[in-house]
Length: 167
Image (cartoon, rainbow, N blue to C red; front, side):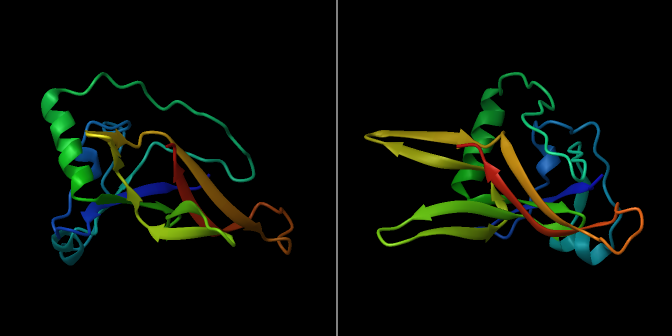
């Protein structure tokens, strides 16, 4: 089983880190803080465990972790502010940071861009309306290399970890 952990949220607009599990998200009660040194805490580089438990060598589709109640007005406004401030969440698989996998189609080519950190959501502008979309469904792509020199063939190394939010 590959351990998935989550770091503090950060923003490219502000330098104030925010703990992801201070938000009303799945797994808040099941997570544990991983002990860190004082410098990591002061700089916002703390990591918490998550309830995501992918199993190596096995594809899994659409696992529901929890069903949340509707957000309160305060929670909704907090999410809107965090999305406006471009807060991103750092995810790790076995200490390898996840990248955001985004397809960009151009006139002459189709490229995949990888960004660090996963946005908390996005702002959608439509005519005179502004809507906020919170990402709460993800596809985790964890590519591994199996060590064939091992007699048991159960040793894996993670070679790529990216996340695609459901849009």
